[in-house]
Image 1 (cartoon, helix red, strand yellow):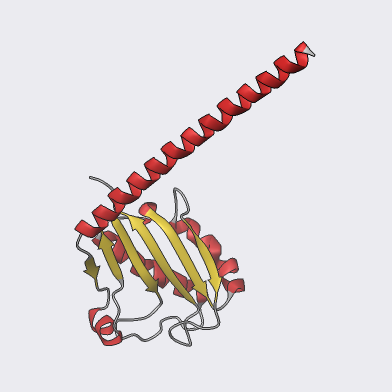
Image 2 (spheres, one colour):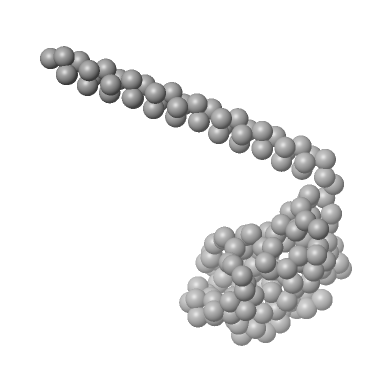
Amino acid sequence: MRTNVRLTTFKFLFLSTFFITVASCNQKANTTVESKNQVLHETLKSEKPDYFLLRPDLEKMYGYTQAVRIGNSVKIGGVISIDEKGNPISKDDFKQQMKNCYNSIETILKHYNCTFNDVVLENLYTTSMSELQKNAGYRHEIYKDHFPTGSWIGVNELGLPEIMIEIEIEALIPEN
């Protein structure tokens, strides 16, 4: 009986200590997350957005901005394979449309002193998931060190009927 009491007491003390420790860690973690969120919120409030127009006339006509920098974050809206006047390029060539998108994205990244190594999020929208899968290997030429997180999303159509792929990116500007 005495052994059962000791064992029960030990279990109670162990579990009590465990739950107190877990609760304490959770409280510290929540405090840390809350303070980081507050710093991020204050930083974003104090930073004035810097807008970048890749194709100024076209973007003004349709009412969008291709990219915006807030703090050390660059968000590049969906890039498609078009020329300066908004005409589709490489209408029936998925891989070339993909290359054209990445070329445009590279221009924007360079503007903000970034490379594809600084990309942390990439979302690909496509009207042909099978073509994306067939040509996905090209991304190894773009992302040489690591791939960003992101999604491949199949859609019925994009901004223009001839467009098969649209790419949006988020990157972090490296500290100098």
